[in-house]
Image (cartoon, rainbow, N blue to C red; front, top):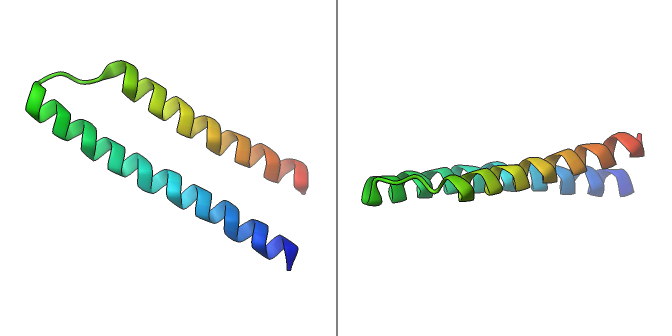
Length: 65
């Protein structure tokens, strides 16, 4: 039962990160179309943060097994 909850939670986190990345990318496209400028620092920071979250989740899962 406990492993099932953890598995569902990690799948929820991964799904949320993917969905947020898609929404963020759409937002960046909209900003680019309106202003003609890409927010480079924001894009780098966003994808660094989401990648870090997924790496930490993977590390926790690998140490658990």
